[in-house]
Length: 287
Image (tube, rainbow, N blue to C red; front, side):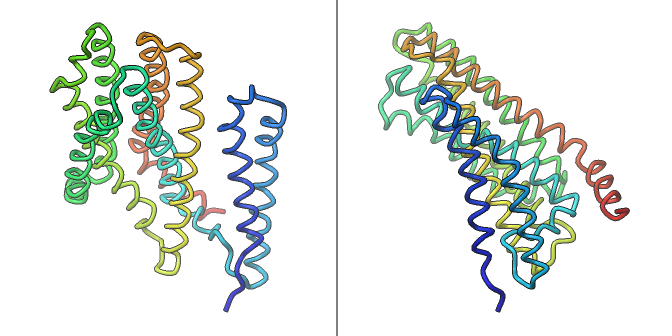
């Protein structure tokens, strides 16, 4: 029985802590020197982690991460796309929750109901994502990201229009509900396809399936934490302590521009994915 990679777990934990904690706490602390020092230590810690994993494998142990999986072009690019995609996933809910409750005075229950169309759209689309993927392949990710972009842009515009209404009537308007539905459908189409892209990639053996799933989960949870921290910082920086509707709308727009940029990058990479994957695979084989 192979020994557990406790040192690898420690290195991986340190890398994530040194990367995420200063981004989360740095803004509230006024960006002190220690926050920049911690981020600067991430690359050497990552290098030490990779060196340890290789040595641990050579010594007959079972490393925490199967590094050879990164030689699979589809997995590497899939992880890159997943990082971009999920970086804007969780922060969408965090920012809108603050926006609706603090900016527009909605109750927690009313705010929760605003997300109900998203949940319905996501459930319906995710259950049919595989069937759509069989027809259009990886284009289902592009379809999903486009729908999410439409939803984000629409939410920005209609919340802006709602600011002119003293009773916030447009927040209960059918169109804003449809925009949440569209965003949910888009995420429901794209997310299962991204999971399958990494975990179900060609060249992934049954022995590697667990490692591939573990790497994927680590990437998406880390990206969501980084997204909440970094894009959340953009939102609160733009808010600058103001409590007017105009300031909340400006902060929402600036934060969602970051989300849109991540979705555009996801769309472009997936658009070129087959060509990039073939090139990366050829380069790996040649080496």
